[in-house]
Amino acid sequence: VSSAGPHRGLQLLLLLFIPLAQISEVCKVQSGQTVLIHAGASGVGSAAIQLTRLAKAIPIVTAGTQEKLQLAAKLGAVAGFNYKEEDFSERVLEFTNGSGVDIILDCIGGSYWEKNLNCLSTDGQWIVYGLLGGGEVHGDLLTRLRSKRGSLLTSLLRSREKEYKEKLVKAFTERMLPYFSQDRSPHVQPVIDSVYPLHRIVEAHRTMEENKNLGKVIIEMPPSS
Image (cartoon, rainbow, N blue to C red; front, side, top):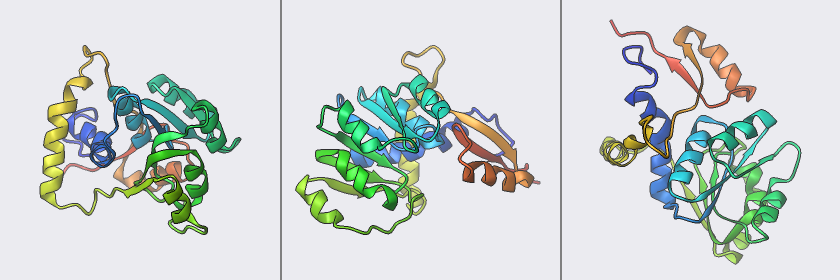
């Protein structure tokens, strides 16, 4: 984020929500579907909750503290499970009366594969957009995924060509920006944990590594000369 503009301006909205716009293009969330969002109090997770509600779908989240689960609930999550204290897949199955979730938005990856498959519904979609838990899978993933007729999809915005990103920004601004108005109902907003100047980047990374942040951690670049 540049210091040339306000933190809550268009640039920040794009930073927080465009990754979700790209994920939405992949999974096409539909009204009434149940969506499991890992890291529900992260920058992307908090945005995913709000966009899921806009689609009239049902957001469920995982997080590692009660404070983070409370934030997710405030944003519209209908249920939240502490992955440090309970098996989230079993709790998701309880919540969905055994049917599982239609979509999983997964930034964890390998370490969650068995629990994700356990609570994925038949014909469900599992979207991997991050690998915080590693990329290796030890087990019969494909057999179990096929038995559910599940779809495993991946999303990576960084390597996309400039033209694709421009189209994504245009589509997002046309469709979503009205919902950022304070007068609009439903209303969505970016969740920002903290803004660090560039010279404090090590401190910012430490905050994320210790999993302390609620929302997005932003690095503010000095003005260009």
